[in-house]
Amino acid sequence: MEDNDHRKIGQEMDLFTFSDLVGPGLPLWTPRGTVLRQELDAFVWELRSKYDYGRVTIPHITKKELYETSGHWDKFAEDLFRITSRDGREMALKPMNCPHHTQIFARKPHSYREMPQRYAETTMVYRDEQSGELSGLTRVLSITQDDSHVFCRTGQIKEEFLKIWDIVDTFYKKFGFTLQVRLSFRDPKTPEKYIGTKETWDKAESELREIAKERGADYIEGPGEAALYGPKLDFMAKASSGKEWQVATIQLDMNMPERFDLNCINEKGEKERIVMIHSAITGAIERCIAVLLEHLEGVLPTWLSPVQARVLPIGEAHLAFAKQVAEQLKAAGIRAELDESNESLGKKIRAAKTMKVPYLLVIGEQEVAAQTATLESRAGKLGALPVAEIISKLQEEIKNRA
Image (cartoon, rainbow, N blue to C red; front, side):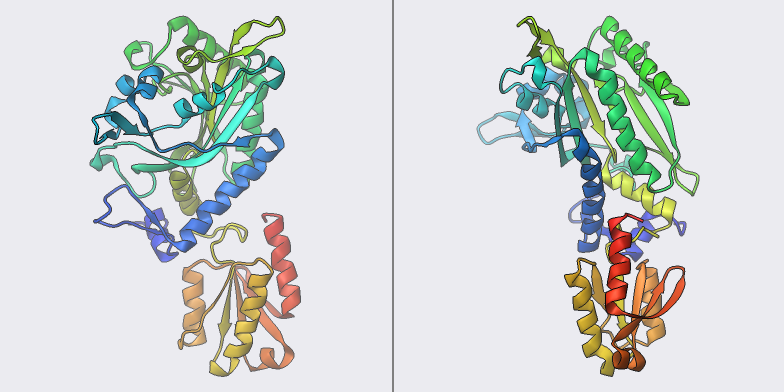
């Protein structure tokens, strides 16, 4: 396993683990790994907040009939985890969220003045991948999606696509990625793999080409890479290792609104068929973390680091003040840990660096006397500073997502 393999980095940083008892493809997230997941998701929600997305919540199972209506029961059959209830009802663990979200939209009539409707949630979906296809966090059975669905009128498609594209660009530029855009279209040689008519698909694919051209994107086309229900804008990120992964996706769906009879009431008081835009900014949080760990070699920015500072007392005599410093950091909203081990300072520093902790605060006799801490960042030693000054520095860096 290479040094920058996310599985090796994740183990060193104590982010996630796998258990033979739980099964392959089912990662278990530690407290540190869960912080990382939550911070990534919070960043996505921060970017979405300006566009008025509403949080929704759905169950993780459904009746067979929902997926029969959407087309997934037949077209997605091999990937479904199917369940039979005690009274013989056929059900399934959800492999995607869009059919559930259609039913939230369909709960009441919507005027054209209420359009678009934007729903989003971060939730797990489950897909029955073959065991030989599973690999670390990049291919799993339990997939966490920061999933959103925009229900809009045809004339609103371009504007909504470009808003989501802005979110994607902002998110990945924060980590230094250059994204390749792929227009993922249907394979005309295998029409049986998709739902909807040729005319509907031609219209949707033409719409995506127009949007990509207006954006000035240097895109490639990927025949056969479309979703079941429509074409996609897929974003490919290349890690520093040279590996390329699909990350974010924006998908245009003119078929599911047809199958679920989704409409708004237009200016004439008549029903008007709407369209759906599916998107996920991280794509899947598991894969996004794998790509980030390999791209950054585990050196996450301070705002994203599960542990942002570690306090290192040199000896037992310095422990009491070190505890005070650690508590001050935590009270200020900084994720801090105290190393209370009996190891030498050198070993404590090496352990913290293995964990990729951005800031180390060393406490010795001089620091106790002066009520300071010697601060060391990844770039080197910054000297002895008052604790309040250290807190201010870290808070500013975290606030700005530097």
